[in-house]
Image (cartoon, rainbow, N blue to C red; front, side):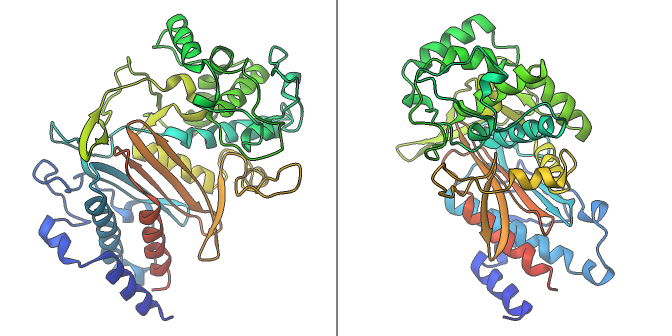
Length: 409
């Protein structure tokens, strides 16, 4: 299929460009986000400030990002989403950051580049990267029984399990209601630890789920578990002698210049924190603030779109671990019987139009998130949304088709 034919089909699939005219949107201009529910932030990052395209590409840039905007707005309209932030990486560089809709619908506060969204399970890739960093320092063996590093841990059955199995969701650990008494354990932990201090994964794991029996022998089958990632975070604490939060700050946040990322405590003031929304019998309702920092290694961060996009860029560029280490995380894992799982270590592994795709999604109260990238093309996107009913996969695919097609022009 010819490039211009592909581009024409994309336009038709996304919808009529007149939607932008009706909403008064423009990639290069600014709009008053207070005036209309699907207006964009005035803080639009000019792609030319970060990406130096070839001269013949310059004239095509506005059309390229008009298509991106239209794709986002069409999905927001179709799904009735409240607010969303988008980050793009192209050719290994951050090329586009933008906010859409409302950070707080009732108070008419628009999503901006400072708006802080929950990451939810996008914390899991962080835990995998921290683990691989210790591997590359010779301090951690992913295939050792974790009792070598944390002697206090014992599952009821006495089965050995490894950090690799934890990161691959092959450890047999339950999650939430699969673990009897976890809520009582959490209440006890929070009462003793306080809500202002970043949770230590060792103490949180012991209090919430570590005494529960495993659902199955480690390695037998894939079973997704946030608790398993908390345990992986506890192993990191035991091996390094630092809290999980300290390790994140020193080995990821500071080197990358990430300043907005925080543990998402309900009792802590977080600047530009967005409101979250859910649906109750068809009505959109604001979700009360709850605390998720206790499960930091599995889903407890919050940040703006700039910092999450910068983290993805660092993954694509192998800034935090070696390329060999990245490939180790992006390699599909197998059960003890040799069955592939479609999940690596902290990342899902799939394909988009025969292109390798690495990604992770997040689903939690007040948020839906998605980080997806094509490492071989050094291209990726981040989506952060404050509407719990959001389905982000269709938007991901539409945006990647736009980005891929524009490379041919």
